Length: 401
Image (tube, rainbow, N blue to C red; front, side):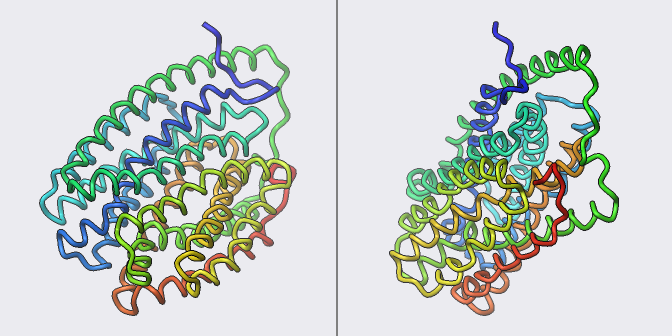
């Protein structure tokens, strides 16, 4: 059997592709939760604030546990942890399909969040080790699966769940079982790759210490604070789309639920192209510049969106999704380069923050929408990409440039 290993010449593509597909299946299941919001709102007579709390239950569970899981993964790596995480997702999926109350929905959503908490830190650590000298490219490959999966979810909801009801979610158990098999295979291949890498390291001269390991504490704190603020801007704006874009389209243009979910799909699916392009470009021009372009580049289109007709709303949302999706890979790699020996912890922290900040933003935006309406909420959120100016304050080093 041919050994799968990352070399100085390039990344271990079989492992990266497998991680990407596992990411696709994992996030496909996760994306079913916001895609179901119109159905749940009508079935259980929920307010926008209660819709936001569902997102909060799912994302905060994930955000609180991901840094802990990442910390444990750095100290005691377990490549098969992803399988256990998907088992939790499977339990949440079954619970969501059978829930008969709002409380049951919250518990099931939290279980899906638990599965995500286990998956992302361990998969991020694997992608880092399989990347060789192309970190942006590797993270782009890994994240493209998540974006595609998150984009396909609304289409599945429109085709499967909306016409047949909440109970039809049980069919997605097949997706979870396939994901568990794939994650088991990926874990075994990664274990083989790390064994080969360890053998090569033992026979090779010691490499010089990386810049990230010598970052001054104040410089590290400043950089991390800025990165978290940038992550908040990106994910708060994304939360407006993933949780409320369908409601915005239905209220403003009077389109059907299925049509609104197709437009949500178009917004999400272009993010798949954004992450791979952003990762590759970031490898060439530097993380600082890529982050700046990703956020500020979306600002004029975000400001135009609330004033556009239906056709141009679709066009502008696609442009915004494409540009802003390119930011996360550079934010994550910049943070990992600052603390290169804590890949799982940093990966868990930033994926956790991505979920947690998105969840808090969704809940807050839901409360705001109940007070002032969904249309003004999108007008306010249009200014969030302006926070990309903070990228100008990021410290620069040879690792992040």
